[in-house]
Structures are given as structure tokens and as C-alpha cells.
Image (cartoon, rainbow, N blue to C red):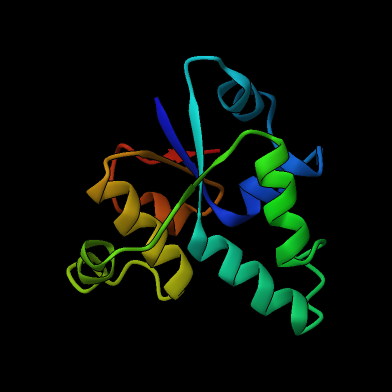
Amino acid sequence: MNLLLDTHVALWAITDSPKLPPAARTLILSPKSAVWVSVASLWEIAIKHSLGRGDMPVSGQDALRYFRDSGYRLLPVDAEHALTVETLPAHHQDPFDRMLVAQALVEPMRLMTRDPQVARYSDSIIRI
């Protein structure tokens, strides 16, 4: 399974946070899962960390290193992803989350998120 982690889930996974539910951890660690993190998540981390936001415990540079060390694959943002954002219903206004949804739908991948609004986009989204 191609599993795309949303930004918070990816951060919880690399920091071994207790906020990551055991079922989510099992899916991430499964040898049947190819785990992906979007470049959009790195962008979000870098922006929010540079602004001193408390919900970004690591810098973008550190996050990239941890993602690579964990064996996660990086998903670039391409034109089709960007254009798909325009077609999404207005369930959610966060541009980073909307990009992750678009990427998951285009590729296709299973997006793992904690956000109930993001989960409204598709029944293929895994809400933890």
C-alpha cells in the first residue's frame, strides 16, 4: 500500500509521539506499506518552525533527515497535483492539507490524517 502521511502524522511517527495511535504505527511499520511524505509537508514544517509555532517540534532540515533515515519516500508536487486542488470541494481551507488530498487522489495513495475535515474528501483517506 502506498501510504501518504499528513504533516502531523509524519512528525508523530519520527518523534515516536504517543499521539500516534497503535493502529497507525502498525500500518506505517508494515513491510507492505510504502510510506511517503509530501514535499508540501516539508514546506509547511519549514514555514511554521521558522515562525516559532509550537506544533512544529523540528526544523524542515531535521524533518527531512529524519524522514530519510526512517526510509520514507518524498513525493514532489507536480502540475497535476496543483491543478487538482482547484477541483476539490471546500471541505477544508488549509492549502497544505488540500495539496495532500490532491496528491493522494492523483497518485493514488492512502492519505493518513487525524483531521476529520480532510477525511471528508474520500473514503480512501485513513482517519486516525
